[in-house]
Image (cartoon, rainbow, N blue to C red; front, side, top):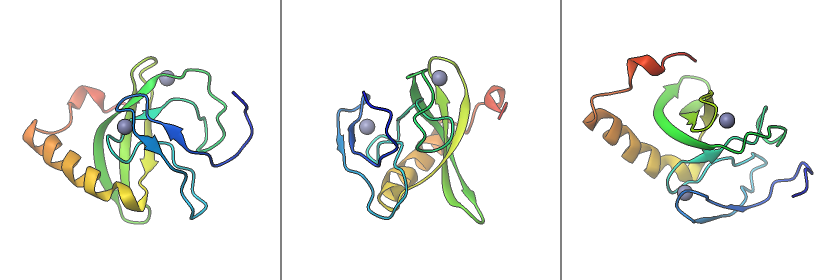
Amino acid sequence: MSRKLENTGFTCLFCGAVIHPLTNGCYRNHCPKCLYSLHIDNKPGDRANDCFGLMKPVNVRYHGKKGWQIIHRCDLCGIIKMNRTAPDDIDTVILMMEQVAFNGGFNENDKNY
Ligand SMILES: [Zn+2]
Ligand SMILES: [Zn+2]
């Protein structure tokens, strides 16, 4: 595995989808199909973290300036991170919002971010 800063595609470790890199200059760090991510960055795109835990999407929220954000929690170390969405995530984000609503909302115990 090289640590070069480049915007490459990857295969989702959760659902197996092959993810193509974004062409708008943003780093894509999560799967547009299931929204899972990997704990490999300290800052978006730096690939400087060695945890390699699966980051589970636990909630979504709308930020006035940044748009839709996915809140990820690492299965291994438990860190919570916000991630901006890519344009082709929106369908999955809406599905996730419905799921979160269906499940009675976000777990209060997780609000340590
Ligand atoms: Zn996936
Ligand atoms: Zn982690």
